[in-house]
Image (tube, rainbow, N blue to C red):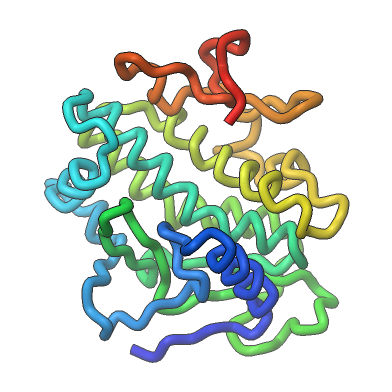
Length: 253
């Protein structure tokens, strides 16, 4: 299979590579975003959504931070990890230069690692707006609205996995979409110093709309989720800083 990499993603790749270099790696995502399946070890993400979900169950068990937690809690935490790395490139591409990488579901691959999961794609399309100077470049698709493009990408690439996780473990789909919503917000805030001014994650969420719209409340000093990732249900843990469970006791991280 030929690996394609659209030139419009050069700025995003440079940002991710710099981030990885500064932090000793980017464990959940290939900075270049594309992988050669011939390297071995890569598994199509679509396999996770196939009944009876044996591969999905194995992945949940593999990257569980607390292995004796109920399976639905472990599944929610696994999804929080997966959703973050899968969603990050879309959020940063939108904020950086309004060029959004879209990983087709049947071209997205993953491999398990000691630190969890690494995500990539064997090919990527880049959504750009009309008038973008690189519109028409190989791998680009011109769209009238990037929020709609992100929403369709989420529904195409994440909804099958969310439904599989829900069917396997009975965790609520809204909880899982809450982690996707946070995965759109957090990278834009975390990279704020290196992104152009005016890239506010609230605008991105509003543009995307359902199924992630309305799942984050923005505050003067940050944001708070309206759904729980279920971390707080584990023994001897405190709520995440953005947890909806207890605003007064959540610590800053």
